[in-house]
Image (cartoon, rainbow, N blue to C red; front, top):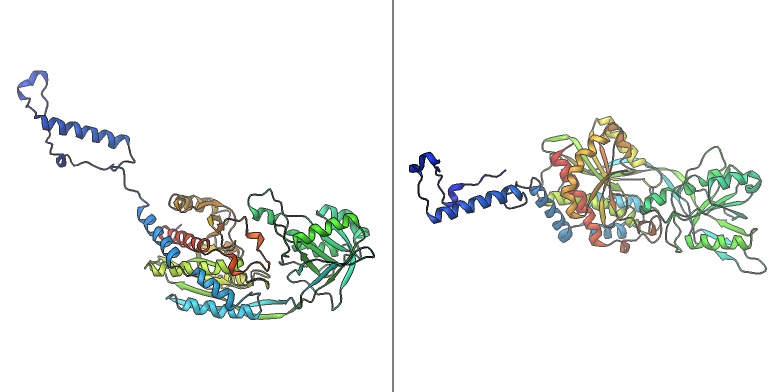
Length: 500
């Protein structure tokens, strides 16, 4: 409690005599009585109104002031948005092993070299190389009563091609694994399986909706091949009804035949489903020109500022540099890369001297292999590098809502209790904290028992762009992107200053 200096009110203490000692009572002037009354009023105010000017000093005041500087600098002089434009138009899409990915590595290293960091380097990573080839052609074959109907489609990442000629077959629509299994070989052999389970629109968090539908894309081809299917079509992983097909990775089970697989747009899925109700024996033709080539050398791009007190403990911030081979990969994950770069840039510009080593890592090959994250974690173990904290941005460049945290089960309760105190500082900037996931690239670091986190922007529009040709630079709003970078810098600052 703050102390009042009584002398500052022009008051001197006096003794009031008891009834047996009236002679010692001093006559108090009217002015002094008024001053004494004022003092008593102020004491009462002080005791009853802790939010008054006499309240205890805000323990977060210095942190609030510095975080405000971070946001102000990012919004007025931040580099993430022009960096994103340069990345998107210099490298374009950046599927691992492609020329675009190679350009992106060179570009990001050159930019980090201009940020006055202590070290910038490339970490070699062997990555898969899958090529889409000529555009896909998927259509419902015509009949005597109607013309052929083209279906906007993209081959799924890692799919085999159709060997130079179309695969043709009747289509069987399924909306659940139970429906697939009930049809069995008798109902599926020689046919094309059409997975048409939509993302659940009733989920507020669209990533929950994605998680409830994406298994069709990932394991659907092999589960259909188990029953003799010749190919697979998958409804795109999106909530909007549009004509943009969504690509994405599949995983073949080597126990079954490798069959071609493609995603069709949500509008195409609706159209095909309606047609099958009228024509159960409708036939579809699928022509894919994709192929898998031998692995090639690529790189993670890394830059760091050495810690002043605990340089052997690392605080990591990052995103994945690769993208799918359609659009610019602006939201996924060019945004996360430039935001991560800007975290170190902002703290350097503001003259902040970190206690721990701050490291920006731009991972290669998250989309179709996670080789960058696995290689980085393996190298960290070999060098005995301790990661206190790792933060990934891989959910788009939309308005930041907060952060979710993850860790080894032995550690998460203790860690989350510690970071939850930061919510008081971050709440005025629109940021909340909760337990949940972190990021794919940093997940291999979980064994080090540090704390992992993910930036969580507003998710409502993310799956309108995810893995589509619509994911271009122009789809990212500069203010939203810059707010995300500032939010990440604020959390990194707090973790660095207070530790875990």
